[in-house]
Image (tube, rainbow, N blue to C red):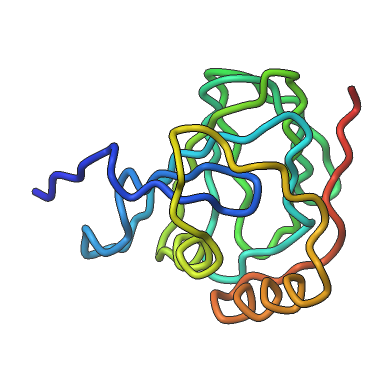
Length: 160
């Protein structure tokens, strides 16, 4: 059994605080469990994971997900799965922000987070970043490509 220090290894990934609850390297099947916290309006670009399903378990707040051609409203205590090779994204819709857990295997998404993130400077969220610069966008696309993730479109805008 591998015991992981839940409080260790927090990073800022774009506008999100991420903790590596169970890193992919901890087990033979490379199961990755990450805990996220993000502000209102946070949304990744529309994207596909080519090698892994992604499970989302909402801990706090309300989210709007797009998976394939469908939209789902998901709140605390609810779980959603985005199958590999299906376009998906979310938007944090609650004014107080949101928290969730993702589960993926074999850890390509975790690899992307580790590549693009920076160490946290405090226990809070990073300062809002806004749209990436052309250089940042190019670096993000290259990192996604290296981890079998393809960006297809822009982030979602919040409804509220």
